[in-house]
Length: 347
Image 1 (cartoon, helix red, strand yellow):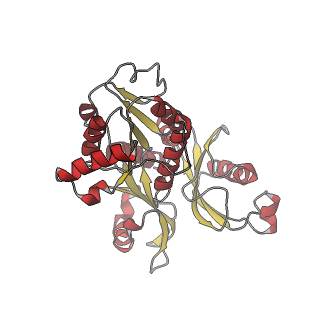
Image 2 (cartoon, helix red, strand yellow):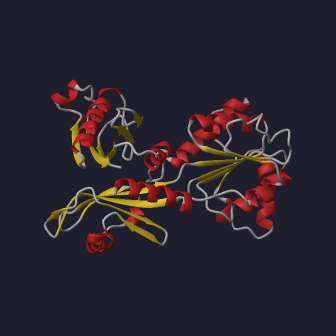
Image 3 (cartoon, one colour):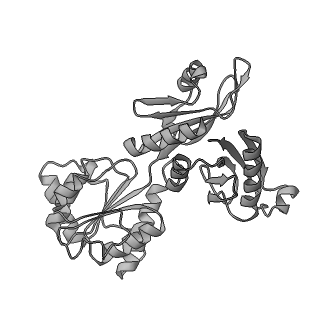
């Protein structure tokens, strides 16, 4: 059922851009151990891994607060659940294909973002200039922006060649869902665009969502430095969310391959540790792996346990104390604790 569950999750993320995944990490229902059972809630859709405990899930959903995002919750009956607010792969939509866009695109691909380039000039919107872009639209900005996917994990950067196109892009973007929108330009140019929009009925609270001047104030001058300052601001906004991501490679591997696997997920972190809640590593029976939960000896311990989980065909939870002497032998003496969920994924 785990494979079916993750296939469903991938489909819902593609459709809706977001989903809540709830995992029981300690609990019993009708004297049956239900640790590891999972549920997805995405917009109006609820998918339960095991329908025979649907009544139990009704009770859980009435007790937990999904608005808290990714968190662990202990309920009155001592049932413990891990709630994840999972977002689709982050999407960067760059309006304009000039020098700064080129540097932004290069950084975005290093960070594994889905990148869309929009420009109405073929010399600035083509595959030769942006060979690894996920989508290139050589069209008027208003037409292109109404074609692209958007949602809570979408980041817009407006770097067009003039205030007319800046305003056109901004007016369309402010009507959509997004995590971030930033607009480049001198203070004079920015004030011209914003004041023009305010005079035409746009609300101040909508305009205040725009990061302008764009980027962190680090004294950036070259296109590459400006791109770094913009991405610094995007990362700052991104990491304020209490959310998780699952690497696309992990979900696609579960969907497309029939090998026996184990998925290791950090579900709790206290104190210092190499990776945070939601970090994942997928281990195959043939010993291949995708993803990371921290690197070094920490990762090796998780990797070895994942191979045991595949052999035993079970779901378990392991806790690693990163301060005690046994953990120190693993190279994990950085202080704190992590709890890892290991899920067996069969054929």
